[in-house]
Length: 365
Image 1 (cartoon, one colour):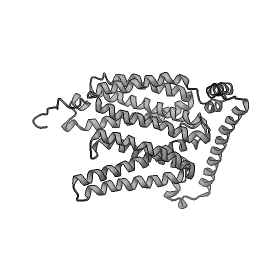
Image 2 (tube, rainbow, N blue to C red):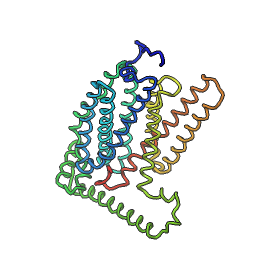
Image 3 (cartoon, one colour):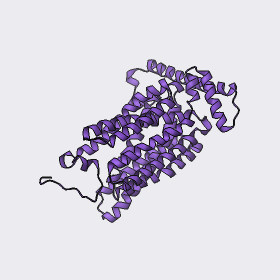
Image 4 (cartoon, one colour):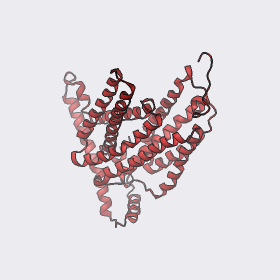
């Protein structure tokens, strides 16, 4: 760094080589990922309100359109500041699109088929995950890679003409005629005859969830007034359903995306590690679906979190054990992939579970 630097002309053309993000400026490459995730977090907060206010399908389409436009703009960015700002906006739209899509998916299926639908949809996430690693290996220029990734959103937008708005959300807003039309459109695709009884059942489910929420809030108020401050322990904080839900989601997001973003730095080839990280998600989703049918959701999540913790502790311990690199690399990679598989299965269980715990009209929040 003191005498300058020279890039390998046969290597990949990245943002680091584009704007000389090396030596003392190397930190900005990681900062760009932080900025992207900050945009995603902002999209979660703002998008949740917008989904419940304007509907699931419109926000899903708006998010996809934003991904296509902003993603294409990133490939044309002329400096790092513009690149970072656009990455923040891209994270915002990705969060809105995926969040609205997940809620819409859950609400389009009944309780008996919801687990299968949610977990089956994750298989398409895995396909995109693995293709991203393959495309990254094949595309030596980051601008080309960004343009290709953004163009996929246009294909998804075209397929969204087959989607309908969530009948549960429409009926929760009191628009029963529109909900009936949505159900009839779904019925035509599935060759099922729809009656008003069907619609009333959907409304009954929404009302049941609202009543359940009111009972939970009433119980919390009773506990609040009946318990003195001296009797409250730290563990009592996690008895609150809302706080526990956020802790579950935060823990899964933190570990899951940590393993994704740090996979290139693990032992072995960075593209191979990224690809294997996606490959192990396939058995994880299958396991999540099967175990939910047999054991429910809470117990598997606890066990899976313990497996993740143990696997990551093993990775840390291996760094302090005196062994050859040839012996350490497969052990570290295996432990990491086991942790990735466990946290993926937990993710697949938790996301639909936390969405089901709240009423339809505030489910996104």
